[in-house]
Amino acid sequence: EDIEKVIAWCHEQHYLDDTRFAERYIASRGRKGYGPQRIRQELQQKGISRTACDSAFADCEVDWEEQARDQAERKFGAPLPRAFPEKAKVQRFLLYRGYYMEDIQAIYRNFE
Image (tube, rainbow, N blue to C red):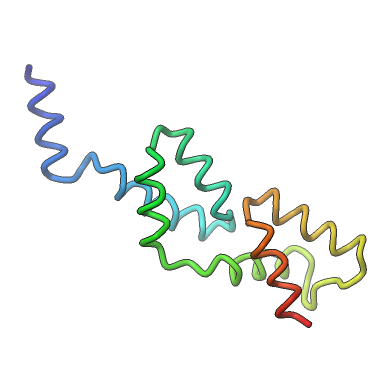
């Protein structure tokens, strides 16, 4: 009974708020260079609901395309490689980090 009161109090004070946790987690992992796909998967593994993830991603102000470009340039140098084998390495690296293919393709589309 006391435990239930403590948990209810924590919810009232927003100490146990999945949406707030998701927002902070997205910001933290985003700063470390991970993409939205990987972050979403990690949040769901931590038990955060899909609706909480969706609302947290809607509220975040991260430019994933710009972040993907920064990660690629940090790893492979600027300018990014244009030859197919090296370009495929960049794509595999960014896919592993959790970026969407649309963001990866936009790097090269806006690069040319």
